[in-house]
Image 1 (spheres, rainbow, N blue to C red):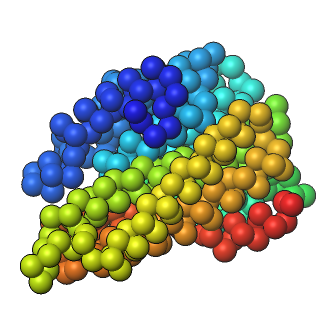
Image 2: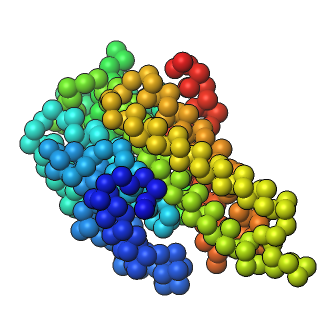
Length: 371
């Protein structure tokens, strides 16, 4: 049974994803095969769309089949186990939450249909390393032709895959709105680089990007509240991915302890290592326990209690990731940091996850402020 699945449909979704990722995008396949179009993130996005996975992020009346926190967590945990590093959280969960609130019916329908079918990728231009209530750094100025955007946004994950970006910007009077900015817009510059987990990110430089008035998206709710809600969903998704990695990393480490010998005895027979392994298991179970509470809280809409709980889950997950990631690498010795062993890739992905949507310290402060 999958760690988050509660229904037969969720279990079947997890099984189908596991089969696809194991056969076509497993670590062994990716590590042994030369890079090419078939192994690209774009190809994986199309395959997930064919399997119907992208629809898991949306409500049924918006073209999806789920849209609930538990189903999204099932998907993210499975992606974590396989180290897929897919933009599902960024392009389906976060952007999906925003697009579902778009007041323009025809534009909303077209955008959501494109998302579910995997025809194009849209990203929220938000730095993942900042706290959820991060200030908006892009300025929107009115011109005779429409709107001009200026500002910088750092470290947008998967920016190279996007056909367009949802850019939050504020006017001189402090009013915040979201603008749809095509990637090929004049004045939009991308400075790309690779992150520790292998994902390509980019700093977005908006240098007087001129947009027509239609680029300003209208919503039935305040743009700041909408972004905050979407980022909380994104945080939930990353915690679920962390939980999936922790389970797989513990499994690999415990198996290694029961097969590797030193001084003529199994590593797992040494009491000191047994205690450390027990702490790793407890840390993973604590993450699962608070994730279940957080998933239930997301069924009641955004409120202070839900916000505090997702910050608490992020702190516990990040703490567990730090402990389990470092312990797994240390238990494996020199091989723990080699590219040939999946353990090092899990550890690097956990480092990246700990810095997404604010680190543990930022969420501790956020948790205290919400009490």
